[in-house]
Image (cartoon, rainbow, N blue to C red):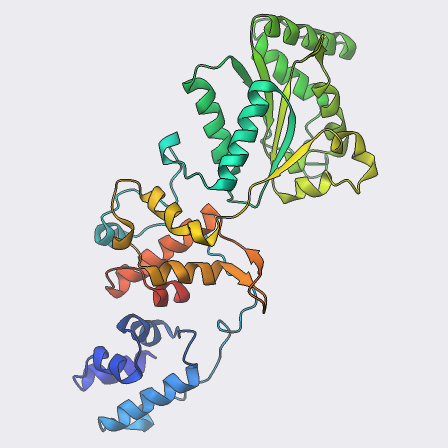
Length: 377
């Protein structure tokens, strides 16, 4: 539609007059003319007819207007759309006065953590397991905030000076088979425990002696008043044999006292591996509680955005109510009865969408993010 923009400029007609004629916002008209991006309503054919009538009204030759093909691919979408990683442009930083993008940057302290009812429950479950023992698996989609909660747990234990030793085996190249990468085995977990509790002592070579040694250092540390928690990220990449061996780590005891709490953190595939329908892993399923980190509830989205902004600026200087409602429409799919079928209101997806919208608003000269901006990012 760049040719229409040029026709208006040549004839000294402002885009605002066209927007008034079409009964659309200036931002929507900007998107149509500059990017061929149409709003959800009215339909593209009605808008194109309105543009033709406007040009004819101002005696602009219609033969200069290229044929407008009608496609409503976006309006007919069946699934919510995710954006790639978005980086805030210099223009957007200046317009919204944000030197650091709060929506995509990592949380630096517990004060910045937004706690919905669901997040608070998962956070409490992780802390209870770390302090008092237990075996839980925290699952959720990519970008749901699982790693953030792990960092919050470790920071909380240090901040409150609690006698809990965290043990994190390295999973940099871990896969569930040795063809795609390297599997994390029980021997590697034993080494991680031993190195965390007795880093100056040499671990035994014999498997039987090594595991006895690990059990002994756990008991000695427990007698000194410490609790221990094993945290494994990317746990969806753990092979079935290692998951079964974790049950035996969990059963290490000193009298009635459990010596090791276990927190597995992984994507939803971890929940499938730990399904009660999988007979090969029934001994683990009966002992491991699955805690799922749910997406942000639509009613809590504005609270989440305001919390991420913290004290940098007010939420209404970034996005208006229509923009927030549009984010829900964009990332939540419902059925004909209004029930949620799929929600992608996860922190990472929300952050990328808001960042892309700020970039577009800045490029169009629109002061705040509106529904039109969100629906056309």
